[in-house]
Amino acid sequence: MNARFRNRFVLTDSIDRVAGLYSLRSDEVAVFLVYRESTNAQGYLQPASPRERLRREFARLGDTVDRILELCPEHPYDDIVAQVVMPGWQRGGTVLVGDACGAVSLLAGQGGSLAIAGAALLGDILGSVTMPEGIGPALADFERRWRPVVEEAQAAGRRAASSFLPANRTQRLVRRWVIRASHLPGIDRLIARQIVGKIAR
Ligand SMILES: Cc1cc2nc3c(=O)[nH]c(=O)nc-3n(C[C@H](O)[C@H](O)[C@H](O)COP(=O)(O)OP(=O)(O)OC[C@H]3O[C@@H](n4cnc5c(N)ncnc54)[C@H](O)[C@@H]3O)c2cc1C
Image (cartoon, rainbow, N blue to C red; front, side, top):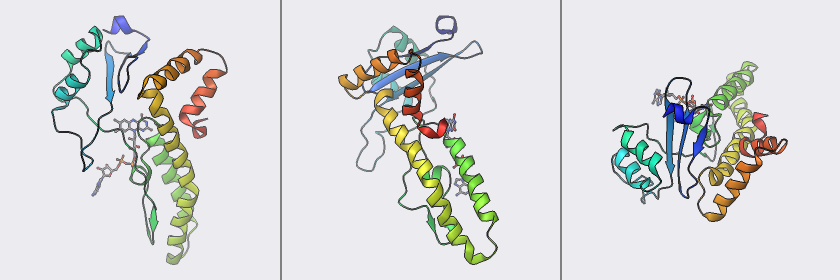
């Protein structure tokens, strides 16, 4: 498959499900399959082996996807695309950091970078604390300063959802225009900014 997809990033033009693949530097092709699934009342996905779910969800999407499903291992990496949104990060001398307070999801990317940069800021803020009673206010200050950055990345991730995984024909049409426009000089930067938000500039 690598020879067929070399230097290409290919997506299906489908609604509520997307199969994507791209060639790696090795002689392999990476594949991802993403779909919308309704959860049950507890918020859990319907039980089924990942491979069976994928075969059910991605049936009739063409020969290439059929081949991907044939090659799908029994236990592919299987995860939920979700964000963590907490009403508050800090209480007294305790604070949440990284994914625990603000996982942004793969649609925003940058989760690792945000976790590291947030930890660095927290270290700087705590570094100037000289008395134990200063810890709580310092942690609150961390939340006040860092939360807007995380929220912007999360908003960018939510914006990206409809073009990454169109839910209807209109969103699919918009995605086609966005993909076409992304070849135009200047527009490519605008689109990138819209997708990843200003923190990645
Ligand atoms: C498949 C995948 C691909 C990703 N790709 C990227 C990428 O390309 N770029 C990017 O920036 N981000 C990426 N991310 C996101 C990134 O991995 C996370 O945002 C980042 O790791 C968050 O860091 P963290 O320290 O908050 O949490 P984690 O990295 O999850 O660290 C939490 C740690 O706490 C430990 N732990 C949990 N409970 C306990 C307990 N009770 N006691 C002791 N230890 C405990 C866990 O074992 C873990 O080691 C990806 C995530 C996934 C899942």
